[in-house]
Length: 215
Image (cartoon, rainbow, N blue to C red; front, side):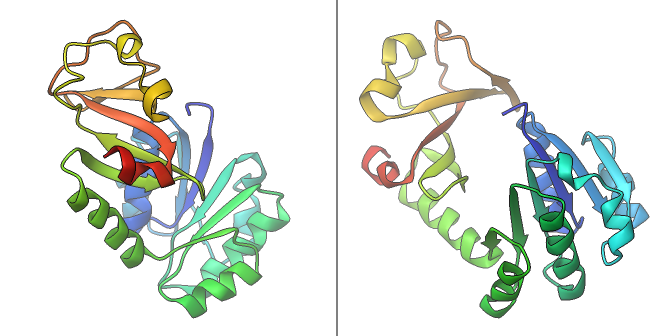
């Protein structure tokens, strides 16, 4: 995941939260917003922070969006800027454009001008919280593709004091452990011989359809 590059356009609460979480996971994150105060808040926690008028095509073209794997357009309150960002990202050849929309109509418009995926924050929050409430083991839940989910889970008691090598989670459950969070810090590519502790949080990727079967 450390090789993935993201541009997050718009530093409202949602955009800033996404940018910081991606950065914590090891991604290379560029953020842009017209508000200097918001840029100052996040600039030391991401790869690059740019002051930019997100409604101006010339300013957007200077961001170098073509170098990004994914562009996230997060200004649901500003349709004009969202449209412009999606269009410029598409023209730049970005492979994956994800846009936040406040309703289905806005989502349809952004899809027409270039967005590949639409996020409806209230709906996504409801889904994530429903899954968390359904399982005592799931701490957080993110859809990363149609069929895959990134999940933070607390280890089962039967997993504690055993190594990933011993547990064979991939073979038994289709679980790929990509990181372990220890005291708030994420260890990527965890040592398969390290024994899991009860206070660990496992970062796993698995098929969305298998989540309810396993947890």
